[in-house]
Amino acid sequence: MSRIDANTLTLKDQVVSINRVTKVVKGGKNLSFSALVVVGDGGGHVGYGSGKAREVPQAIRKGIEAAKKSLVRVNITQTTIPHTALGRYGAGRVLLKPASEGTGVIAGGAVRAVIQAVGIQNVLTKSLGTTNPHNVVKATMDALLQLRNAEEVATTRGKVADEL
Image (cartoon, rainbow, N blue to C red; front, side, top):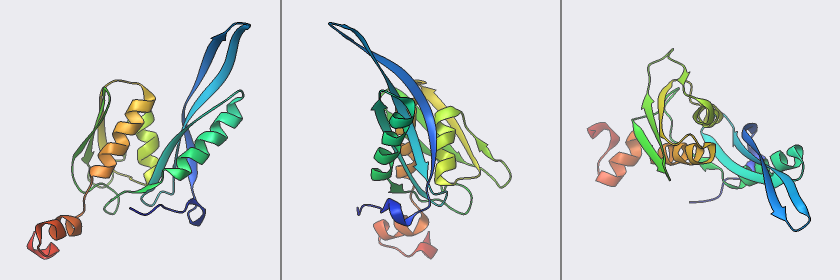
């Protein structure tokens, strides 16, 4: 799989979560911030990244840079997804189901950020298991990467798309 050049796309970033983390050292506590960011072009490209820094804006900037490095292409049909998919990561499971025109994005928090970044307009989702934003985002990405369109399925079966 070839790497996608982030400079050729017009990407929008969305902060999923910001977490205050402390490290206890001999002299006291070191305070820093962790940011989980999702970037996407709204046309089938999406990536996520995590950044950590002493200040929130720097953590977000680092997260955006990491997300641009992890961009992937997702198979979508017009405004929805081609079929149902269940993504797993750790204790997080995310179910994605295609929806008819006009349904909108039925999703919560972290899943909604990823779905909107990729450009899907009609989808039903259910987050099962953990509510940890990091694991939910990774499970959503796993579900999106499982999506296959009719042409890909036909070529793996050795047939033409019209035969399916």
